[in-house]
Image (cartoon, rainbow, N blue to C red; front, side, top):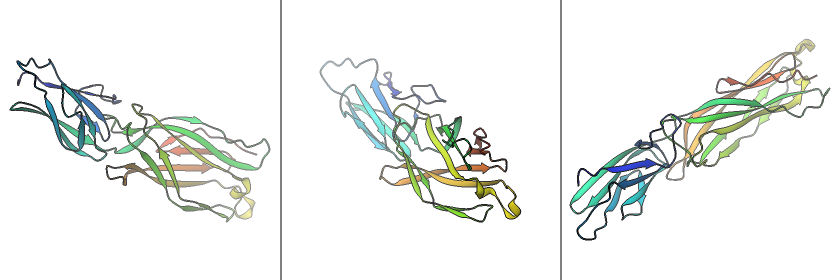
Length: 250
């Protein structure tokens, strides 16, 4: 019996770990487990499966089962039981750690020619790290806090709190985030003495996932920077990645 190992295979690949038999898995990942070669029993007897820690298995009887990792990190131990023999397989269930941008596509705001407004819009693609696991079954959200901005012309604009939801991707791994600011009247950049002044605004947002208890857990922050230049151009930055300068608008 001991020379018949339990095989395991993840349902979805990880970007940086192509090994289908990996045992480091993301929260919410699913893994198939089976015994190979099949048992040759002198009389019918079904193997049965048990699990402890951060996961559940289904079905509980038969030559194979599927582990579904819980949405909270820890160790999941799946055990195959046949007669008086038990064979455990250990899985390290890990949470997301950070957001990493991979590409950007500029999406210009519909500012009519000659309109005295300024703004920018860029769509960034990103992955969730560590990329050695897959987080495609996880519910994510971006928690944007309230804020305010003081412009060179002395005006203040206010930002309302906002929740941006990102549903599970299945076996996908690339998300998109549209960073858009404006349009604003170009007069916002006219400071004392009628001088056109550039200014940058930074916004920090909490990145969260829904854990096994249904609570939103913050695993990191993302930073966006919108820069309004004195030449009436504007650009967006996301986690250190820059979009193209858009404008000048005049």
